[in-house]
Amino acid sequence: MLNGIWLGLMLASVVYAAFAGHMDAVKMAAISGARDAVDLVIGLVGVMALFLGLMRVAQEGGLLRAVQRGLAPILRRLFPDVPIEHPAMGAMIMNLASNVLGLGNAATPFGLKAMTELQTLNRTPASASDAMVLFLAINATSVSLFPLGVIGVRASMNSASPEAIWIPTLLATTASTGTAILLCFALRRLPMFRPRSDPETPLAVGSPAASSEAEVQQTRGPDGDHASPAERRSVTRTAKLVIFATTGLLAIALIRHLIVNAPTTTPLTLARDTFGAWFLPIFMIGLLLVGLAGRVRVYEVAIEGAREALEVAVRIVPFLVLILVAIAMLRASGALDALVSAVDPVTGRLGFPAEALPMALLRPLSGSGAYGVMVDIMKTHGPDSFIGILAGALNGSTETTFYVLTLYLGAARVRDGRHALLACLGGDIAGFAVATAACHWLFG
Image (cartoon, rainbow, N blue to C red; front, side):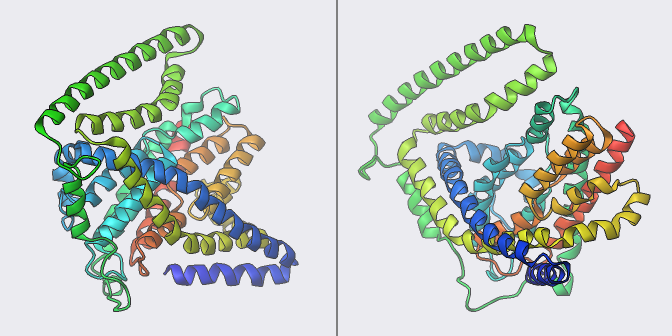
């Protein structure tokens, strides 16, 4: 289905531009879109290297195994084909947790890792497995407890209540995720969405032998020798001291920060700003301390995890270039504006203002495009206007569906996403509908 949509975007862009006289704009958009895609990958490599390295440290330190055991009842029901101790499960947990906490790009490396690990379990590598489709649907519509990005934009525009979009966003993402999950289970058994094999596709991108070697390496020293019991006891005592000292100093610093800033701001604003500034650094240090407590040689293990980022980046470049070029050409051709004008009479009767239509149409296609439209809407109508609040809720209600599918399927070298796109788009529509209803209910 992505094949047909991509071809349709390209054809529609050029044909519409030919009649509208925008061929020069489309030409420049194709070139800039390709350049922007490569720039995006280059910027993503650093983030991926950092978080894949930290995830490897946490995984070998035992944190993910503990979390997996706690979530086992839910995960077994959602992903019965994925062993609870498989690396894919740990990567999915980290990805979904990052999305829920509103960490944005921090979730992407974990998602890419999860897809490549799920591919090792896939019996039909040319087509996405049921577990891969479900993971994609949950990832692209993930429940967001803290839409920090949108709240930050509203605060920068001097909104009287930057956190006003929190409840609509929470309701919308809950609806979008629930709808996407239900569609995954409903569509997977249809004949047209059955997985198909491709003899030209490698059976897997990973190897059980490699996993076994990684497990053995955990118990070895830097030169491959097994650490002695005395060395392990020594490391454990040192680790306890470092963990205790680091935790204590950070707790003191946090208390000092809250005391100093409490008189100058409201409790809600202080909590939001503190969480936004402190959570990610604390999260990173926490993963390292878990590795230290598990007697992991954190630097060496983080390097091994970071190396995977380069391999994944090479895989996703062609996928991103093609999809971002198509989206840039569609916008430059004027076809998107024409589509908004065509559907406005229908959506207007449903309580969805025409000014927010570009936001809804662009959100599944382009995160940066939707972000730009949201900022423009808030500047034009004000961040605390109904349309401004709705634009923020729409931006936080779902992910960039086509970007997520292209990126993750490309990382796993999967050609057929089966029903993933329909499930994700169904979730998008449900999220937009609930966001609109919630904004009318609270602010209309």
